[in-house]
Length: 377
Image (tube, rainbow, N blue to C red):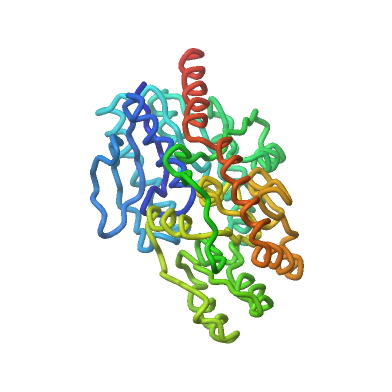
């Protein structure tokens, strides 16, 4: 099967959605499929290269930072991608297009499909659904939503990465949507043995933006200064300096590690050294870092929102907490930090749950979806 993946963020650019697409493409290529990717370029990256059997083409899109996409960089990607996409189609002759994010990648996939007749499958990750991340995209969707309806209608199959994303999409688009979660290579990520750190180590991984609620991490942990713990906050973004000042305000600089923007491999390395994934986000689709944390055997303390509902079995492998309840977050963390037996039990439960998100199972489902589309065609 020849597959063209259209996505505006692909590692090392972007966050979890790009990483999820990369893992899918890598496994499809390993199975012998011809996989091409059309994505955005940024200074320092090659325009053409082969990664793990994937033919990657990056196009100029005015992108300046790996962690931030603006309306204009998205628009530039769609416009530049039209010619580049037609060229790739001429060269690789794909049987099917797989696009991640209805906006902006879906707009490009829709155009290429109209011009060439090649069918496409759409995977929605939450931020591309109206109401998914209102603080970030609410203003855009007020006028953009009517223009997105053809993108969803023309897709031969529509996939959501979580049940929450699916339900939200169904409120806005009259299409069938099935759930296929983001996956990880659980076989190679799962530790041989889960061992606790003598000093419990918490990890946050994501962009330092309002959606991820990074300031709450510092404030909540300031109530636990009587306990022995350390915390790594991995990532970068517009709130990075504000977070640093908040840490200094509570005199906790010695407890925190802020390395800035890191590679996906660095994230996994930090998870290998961690005990607890702490994510008090306001909104999430199905965060890849959450799935990776399961595979690495971390207990999860997260907001009771979005895709975290699929990752956390409350009081079994972690705690789900109402997003604005800082006291409940503190209490949940206190239980785990002060109770090694409970923490070890939760961590082992995460490893077990990670099997549900094995990339092999995820790609099996995508293969079935792609094949069903081609059979219908």
